[in-house]
Length: 347
Image (cartoon, rainbow, N blue to C red; front, side):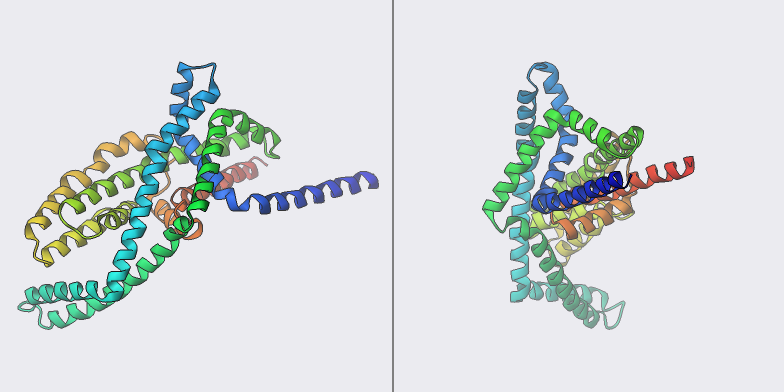
């Protein structure tokens, strides 16, 4: 018995040590692999359609799905990310050099002049606010550049991660069901518990990524086009800000659209301000009513506040891929807690 116990403890220690070493080896690529898993869930319906047409060639079906995903999802995201980081640096340079501060002072002076007859001292108060806004904007842009810029500092590193992600995506699509079955069978959890966690994660990816995040991205893209048409500076940066604000419950895209419209009015572009107002009301704001029911469907949607916090926290922890990994992390916590609560209640 002692021999059996010693053998069990030795195997357990060997297993723990192997897990630690394996984690250290794979740690630089864990977020990349996780991102590949998320895209595999998103692209799986497309894979099934292609595989249905060529059932004898699962590898070819997976390859075709990867190519379509690369063209429709990954390349646009990379281009937008590059554009945003460039515009962020431009805006930061303008803030540091004082060009944007001068514009802010002009806007504050105009707004203060309009309000001065009704609110004595409005001009002086507006000028002080413009200084604070410029300081906060500079700090915000520094944070954005530091987070997003990490992903674009080395072209070789980006290419390597993209290659690994595409390879992992290929095998996840081709052998995903077998891998899921193997994980469930080898897990210490009961099969139904493992299946429940996997199903919850899949529903969350479908609901959050294809639902809430997709709607936010569409609204941000439409808003960005509007900013470009009506002459707002750094439209890609404003568009990404609109996409993030679209996740905020209650206010949504108005949190970014309204300041943009006010800016256009304040600098004297009245026609552009009216045009952006109509654009936001008729196109950007209408997306929730038309697309939300179709994209979100009956999936396991997280609360909008949980989505917002998980996205922002995910970006802070993981970088740009945190947009996807943040909600997935919170969903995994919820799934494990649900299984644990049911297990405790059953005993």
